Length: 41
Length: 526
Image (cartoon, rainbow over all chains, first blue to last red; front, side, top):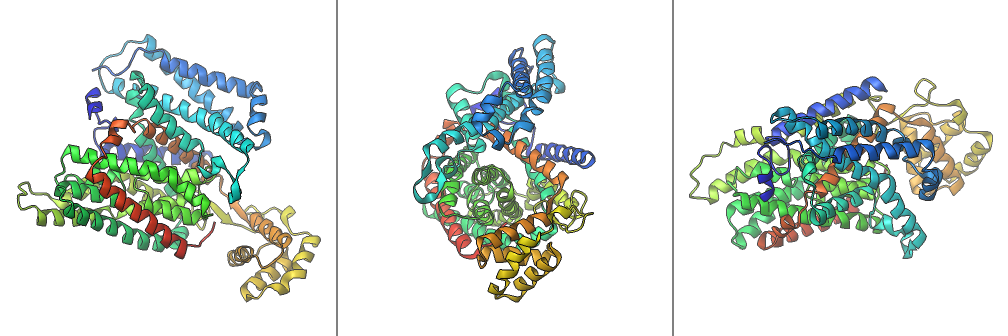
């Protein structure tokens, strides 16, 4: 787990503090993309 | 700590992207594109747009990162990830547009492999997905990820999760009705079976309960996320979590390469392979990798695999409860009280809820007609997209009329008669009957070709769904290249010892048994 020491925030696998935060960001990103596709096509 | 590195790297990435765009747009690459497939080369539209957008973005942000002043804070932390994200993206671009097509050219020059009738790159699944992951693994283990890119590489899982959520737009209730029952039965059997076998073997081999518990969740449900979710329930130590993740990654990487080869050798169809990969492979990302490796130019396999994968994720709360009860029973010395309800509430992956939300939206018909199936829908009127020029001509009607008496089944005969009378497919039921007739190979090749043409004429792809497919493909390509960059030799070595033996036995059993079940009971085609 030496990679974890490189960052004082997030984990070795994610820049977000928890899986839950990452999930929410993914959700918001997906909804933004979905809205963009909905209005553009 | 200040995360933004004063490196010219992002600026250089932006300039390279702009150079690619300029050469593609000006025609300077036309000779090379001709070599890569000419008219069959499918990425020209992407080549003349994407590098321009991302190139401009990278040059602007790269210039600011190099020449600006930076101080610690939220903005510094998150904006510094852009360099790593662009690093992954340019690798994904190079692999998708140039390296993978070049591998295909070389493979085709070598000819088809024996009796398989397939080229070696198809058999080995050497497409942009697999090559991208390999490039990621080589990058991290041989060259190491550059310091300026380290923060951004941690965005790859976000890309995968966003891709999984957007996959919900491709499904409709009608589709789940076809696949849901099968996936629930198969997943229920194999997930619960895998968890049970790992717990039993763990007890026999006397590994700690916490190790066995966390490994069973990882092997049974959905890899890394399940491991993380189950860890607090069985009070797993960090080294045990690392062991489990190492085992899952090592096993999953092997499966990701082997499954497509076996799938091709056995001539599996999209539904069969998707069901097998979604059941037999452990980690969501590797399920996606194998599905895309099996079918790099389409998304049908991925969609089936993801349905199975999502079904598996939905079993997670049941496994968490099971493990909690199992652990509390076995450990007499448990001192810390574990609140199972709270663990489920805190650990249940929200991105799965996002997938279900977009699936619900898609089922209402806002992205495509509500009855769409894999983004495609039936329409035999001008309003729904049918072109009058696609009406069957007299010569084709004559071919069908001459062969109609070969057909025994009444529904198929009626469908062909309706087609002859109207020059087009008249209903979804007729369309299904005609597709079944083609699969049954009752009629001549010419007649089947006409039936396939009639089917295509009434099947339309929604533009919105097509756009979603592109987004999903890129998000997965991005996520999987980044995933490769996280597979270090030390993580793989951590899978050694007994957990690896248990993992290998259970993984092999699951893969072989699910293959047998799929080949025996799953026969649906796209």
